[in-house]
Length: 112
Image (cartoon, rainbow, N blue to C red; front, side, top):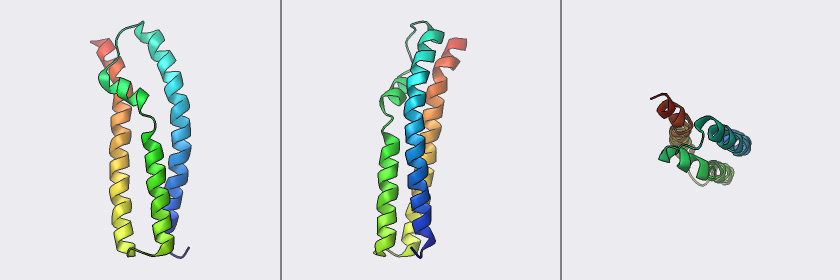
């Protein structure tokens, strides 16, 4: 494992797997808390989708593992892998932001 890109992909795979496990527990707790706070009111559609799609982080783990394998095999050039890594980070951060907003939308609508 000579390339730094290999370590980046490996680190992202481990951190994404840990976060995916934590998110599953957080979603279960959040559902119970939101049911109590909202007292049976309807949730925002984005919140429903966020509750039913916790698997998106596992796709990120699979992409990072594939990036690690590609980096170890040395098939694409290192600059291609770095570009893919940056694009992956931007997409993952965007999805994390949308998920965070989706979890807070019921509370915003509760205040209105």
